[in-house]
Length: 345
Image (cartoon, rainbow, N blue to C red; front, side, top):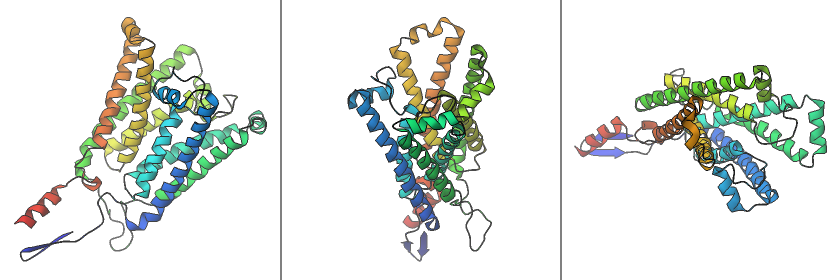
C-alpha cells in the first residue's frame, strides 16, 4: 500500500499479491501436509521398486526418460513418478501460502479421487478382493489407496471454500480478486493449446479403438474398473491415463479459454506432466529408430506431427504460465509503475 502525504511517500507492508488471504491459511496448511504425506508414500514405493528391480539408482534415473532402459518392471509407472514430483511441488507452494497452489491442488485431488473411485469399483469383484488378501503387498497397496482417498477428500474440502473471488464481511458477494487482465490473453492461448491437444488425443483414441476392434464399452470399463486388469498394480493403466488426460485437457482448455477462473496452477501442473510424458515418448522413438520410418506412411507422419505439437504446446504453456508480469503472481503491474512514478515525483 502506497500513501503520499505532502512530499513523503509511506510504503506500508500489505499482503503479497501472490499469497493466499490470511483466513485461508489453515486450508493451505492442511493441503500442503496432506500432499507431502502422499508424495512421501509414493517415494517409499519408488525406493522399494528400485531395491526389488535388481538395478541401481543410475539405471532407474535412465529409465525415467528411456522406457527401454529399466532392467525390470517397477511398482510405479511414469504417470506416478511425474505426479510424485507434482504433489511435492504443490505441497511446498501450499505451505508457502501461494495462491497458484489452489487450482493445482484441486486438480491433483480430483485425479486422486478418480483413482480411488476406480479402485472402489474394482473391489466390488470378489476375485479382485481375494488378491488383496493373498498378495504379500496387498495390505500396503490397499493402505496406499485408502490414503489417496483421504488426501483427496481433505484437499477438496479444504481448498474448495478457499476461493479468493469472494470474501465475507462488508461488501459480501462482490469479487475480492478479479481475474488479472495481464493473464487473460496467455490464459486463452493456453486454453487453445490444451483444446487442440485434447481433440487430437481423442481422435487417436477413437482411431485405435476402431482399428483394434475393441469395444468402447470395454475400453471405458478399463478406465473406471480396477478389477478388469486382473492383477494388483499401483501403476495406472493405459485406459485410465488416456481417458483422464483427454478429460483434463478439454476441461482445463475450456476454463482457460474463458479466462474467468484462476486455473494457472492447474495448467502448469498438467502441462508439466504432459511435457515429461511426451519427452519420454520422444526418447523411446529415438532409441527404436522410429523417426527414420515415421514418414513412410500417412499414419506415421500424423503420429509424429501430434507428438511434435504436444512437445511444442506443453512447452509453450509452461513458459506462459511461469512468465513474469502477471500481477497477482509476482509481476509488476501497471499500478505498481504508477505508484513508483508518483513516489519519485
